[in-house]
Length: 448
Image (cartoon, rainbow, N blue to C red):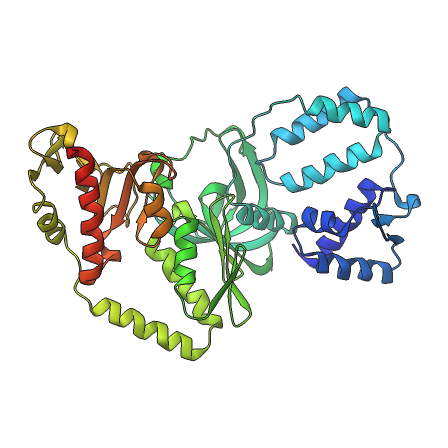
């Protein structure tokens, strides 16, 4: 959020709660900044003439002069509830944060009795939302682009998983139960286009205002939900954290990773996204692990000392010089287990089992069975090893997120189920020994 917008939001927070005092911690939480930032902003507003008073002690905080507050509105509880219901149902839509602020203002401006009754009624509502609109950082950037009618470069993933960069004039937003869309003029196609927010993987403002254009009403078009396969790349917050923590000189504090005092990565567990380099938001479930690693390491190298960059390059060169692990290496390990062999495990699909019983299947190579894209996406479905059921799956994923991952197809990460690794992420005898140990555990789970 830009400082000007933050100062305005701060005044609105105080106005919505006036004449009550609001603590520094509550304001920091509402604006998603530090308490120290709140103090600096309050001082700036006071110096600009905004009548903000400070109260010390229990129940104290900051308050806005009553003359700046909004007089009570003549909404009754049910009228207010109708507005609150619409705002609550739209929590996953663009401008959801503005809707939450509007809800606070509405309640604060009502008479105390009707506001209390509206809150009580709202507590008994159970509302679903619209379809997810994308990572919060992406949605925020798109909102701002539309408000400013700006020209932006977006990274956009198509139905087949390929990402292209489009220069788009941001003219509007379309919200439907199936998804939210940026409506704009695509300079690549020289035509109007709509872009699903949950397929936008990055937004970069070009610092240019879009010209006025006639934008047609897109509401009559039929849009289908994204294919399930679009969200199966194997990249996740745990992997992003592991990549960052392995780099020299990195310090972590909460969701932020820095080197030499410069933040180069912020991981958001709430929507599985990452802000890389301060200006690129990546939706982790839609980006390949190799691409994510390269983006994080590039952002780190841009702010890290040259000596650390050299150290990391030499470390990667030594790792790359180790012998690659092949499918034949894995087969040699598996065939050393008594009774283990390679044969049909689903129809004609080949995998590893014990004897000739399909119920003893315990592993297979990717891509998915029958060559169908369903569990993973390129480049992650090539050269993978899948353990079909692993009892100690939660511990393995927690201990080695840089090597092992799962997808929704194989169940929740905190329960026994399938785990996956890419052979290209392993090299040398030590890594092969780790794979052998995990494979033996999977084998024993079907023979004991």
